[in-house]
Image (cartoon, rainbow, N blue to C red; front, side):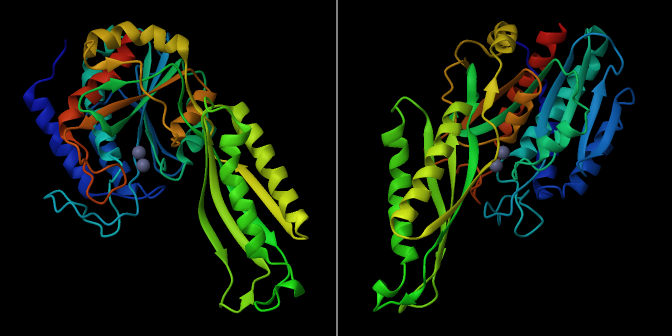
Length: 385
Ligand SMILES: [Zn+2]
Ligand SMILES: [Zn+2]
């Protein structure tokens, strides 16, 4: 199994901590982009396109060379979270934090660039190193795709660190890997009235409670227990004071599934049942189910193509195809709609009470940098042999 020198890793750890200290939220990754561009300037044969979607960067190795085009993707953005780790490399910007480990993902990409640049003549095609902005708001991947820079790509690879999976474990799965989402936005319109005279109006809050109760029952009563679907409500707003029944209630939530067909059916059922329930009480429900991110689908053929190389690189004890798909969304899923793609998780769990992603106490585990570098390098080499 290939290993990297202690000096190579320690330089990357330093880079990771530097990036950690300078977090920027979605579409604002200007200093981050400048840092990466400066770093890339050490590799003069890379062809660089910057400013994609504002801050995105694609560096192409072996530009123009015939053969497959392998895209390696990292996200760049941080979150509006106030860091509480107290680490020496803690965020220098109050209220902004690399709480999802995108600092670590970028670092693994930088390491992979160094390795692959060194063997560029042995590669039978191109590698596009993609630094994607704005993953956390689910819009960066679409900016990259609409730039046309990935047109004709042979394969797209990405990974995310995962604090709930054993440290160093590399896990993926054929087919659906992360959920597709629909945003749910419902306005229930009744007639406002005095709280002591409900019969004089149409109680929008009461109607909303009936709708909520129905929404929560949809996954269990309309879908098989073997289908993957979550409907959750995260926002309700209505009323002003205790003795007025308000005319309107606003409900917002999300529908998550692992198949486009399940999503389609869920949206239809939510729409119809919500409208009918409101109607039954003389109220009106205006329902909007907007498509968020698509289901992320790992390409089976691509996975077969790289499987043996991954197995050799990580060993049977650290590589599995039994990764449970996540019900969260990741905008990497957009790439699976334009090219064969593979999304993988790398575990960082070292103890039971690991802070999870987006926690103010989270920090990317530097000990998996070597694994992340190897993931990108192995992916590229397995296609470009
Ligand atoms: Zn993330
Ligand atoms: Zn995140």
